[in-house]
Each structure stands twice: as C-alpha cells, then as structure tokens.
Amino acid sequence: MNTSELNEIADALRTARINRAPISPPSKIYPSLDVKGAFEIQRITVQNAIKKDGDRQVGYKLGNIAKVMQDAFGLDQPDYGFLLASLFVYEGTKLSLDKFIAPYVELEPAFVLKGRLRGPNVTVADVINAIDYAIPAVEIIDSRVQNWAIGLEDTLADNGSTGAVILGGTPQRLTDLNLSNTKGILQFNGREIMTGNTGNILGNPLSATAWLVNKLAEFDVEFLPGQVILPGSCLQAMPMKEEGHWSCTFEGWGGVEFDVVADVSPKL
Picture 1 (cartoon, rainbow, N blue to C red):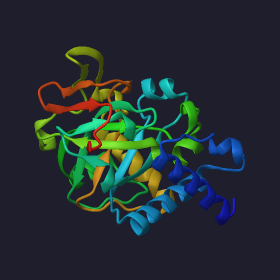
Picture 2: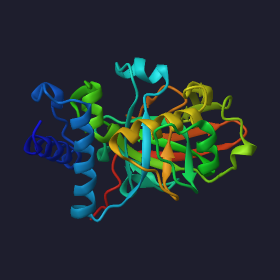
Picture 3: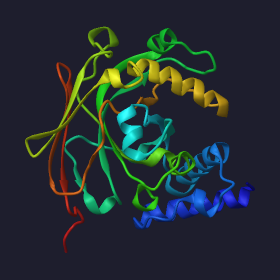
C-alpha cells in the first residue's frame, strides 16, 4: 500500500474515534492491507496524536493473548499497539459511555519498566530484570470498526482497539507476586460476572511481555525506562454497556474500581 492510502485509513479511524462513529473494516475497503501496513498506520496515528493533540507515547499493549479473548473476537493470534498518555484515566473517575463506541472491560497486570528492552531474542529473565514494579490495571478496549468485525489487520490499524487504561493503587515488586497463578475477578454492581487467571496470559504475563518485545523488534521498536506495558487480559473481556459500578480485582494483590455513567458532560 502507498503512503496516501495508509494516511487515508489513519484519518478515517481518527475521525471515527473523535465522532464515535464506527467505520467498515479497513481490510474490506483496502484488500491489500497487511500487518506491516497496519503497523505503519499505528505509527501515523501516534505521530498525529503527538503533533495535533499534544499527546505523548507512554508504552505498549498486547491484546488477545489469552485463548478466551481470541475466541471472543474471532482472532487466532495476538494484537498489539501503542499506549498514549491520553488513554489513561484516574481510578475513581467516572467513565462516560458516550465517550466510547462498543467498549469492553479487561483486567490485567501492568508493568512499569526501569530498564530498556529490545528484541529479538529477549528472554523472560531479561523482562524480569527490566521491570520496576507491577500494578493492577483495567483496559477498556473499544473498536472504531463496525460491530467489532475485525481481522488482525483491522485491529492493528486501530492501534490494538485501545479505549482507556486505569491503573490501580497497589504496586508490587515481582518477587511479592505469583504471576503464574493469580485469580482475577470482574464484578459489576456487586455481582461476579467473570473470572480468570494470570496463567492464561501465555503461561504468565512475563512471558507475554517477552513475546511482545520480540514481536515489535520486527518494527524496530525499543521499550524504554518509565514506559507502561500491558501484557493482555487474564480473562474474557466483558461489555461495558450500562451505568453502574465496576470492581476488578486480583486476589491477594489489589484491583481497580470505577463507575460508569451515561454522560459526564457539564450541565449548563
């Protein structure tokens, strides 16, 4: 695909995000769109956000690493994307449904780096040595593609279907956690609606992070100190489609709580 076509897709997805009006899958409109082109669209999206919106790149995400997530969204391999500062909201902040298109809630650990990581051939030991601490996190995924009718190229072009990120308040050192076997629980309005385990994230999320670093080395990406890494959900994402209170918890560690409202716009 040529640069003009890649920019057209990036602009269409940006407009869909701003207007909360989903578009047809880019891969249907541009059949020649491949993974390399989709990742280039991510780069264009990040550059536009920085130049036009004053945004900042703060990390990377991995998605659909767990089989339950791949099955739920009809994919057979993970997706990945950039994290922008504008995606992050504070725990306790009310999230407005009218800021999203078709959002889902995920629970995952987040890692904050103290060292650099650059593939290929990064091992789990390298990842452990580069992580400063882990923290419970919620990712709200959202798609600018109509009805989540995504192939891998579509979700990559859409920056891994990012929507929002909420970090919790219980950072821990890796040596204080069992990331191979920590139960995760989603509750909505006091009712348990989904459970999972960090073991679902490629055995453990440290392995998933090594996979992500090595994968993005194909695109000459280096992970830097201070960046946030989301290695993927430990459970099946659940739709966020009505007002109420979410409690998203890792047993024995901590969690994230937030409220969803219809509209948080100021009233005149």
